[in-house]
Amino acid sequence: MKDLQQIFRRVYDENYILLMRVVFRITGREDLAEEIVQEAMIKYYERIQQLPHDETARYWLLRVARNLALNYDKRRKRESAIHQNIFQDQSNYTTESSDTRFLRSVEAGLVQEALMSLPFNLRVPLVLKEYFNFNYAEIAETLHITEGNVKVRIHRARQSLATRLKQEVIHG
Image (cartoon, rainbow, N blue to C red; front, side, top):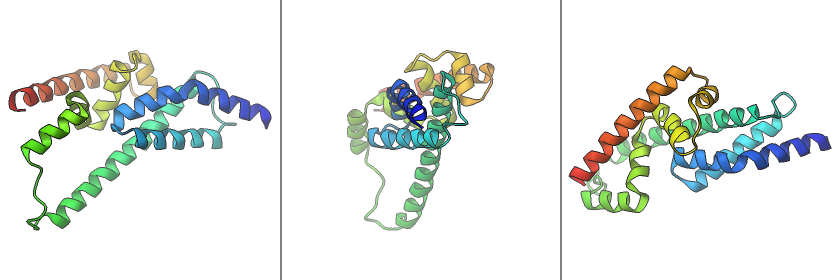
């Protein structure tokens, strides 16, 4: 039992900061990133006897954290759609003004906002590549997709991000 605790502590210490950075970049929220990383670590601890204890544990944890972040993203979109449907006809709830959008984008950062607007399947590989210097093979292993697919997704994400940022500068 003590050996498993030592293994968990080592895996935790080696991966926590990386997981926090990745999930923060995916979600854009530190509190949510912390919650997701903790949940991923709990899942690892619960399955520690069946899971790898070497470098591949990092990829497993990244996949779990990515999936948890995806679930959050889907839930947030559903809740947002429900909220819009409920308050759509009420005049008290108008859409955000351009001034508010501008102030919010300045506060959050143009790049982070543009990044968050990318579809999840494009955002995650781009975050892993650009913010964490993962190579294509590492991203492919983490996401369980081919290297070719990783390259395509990153290319599309970069194009979309550039377009969104240009639009923000022109219309912002």
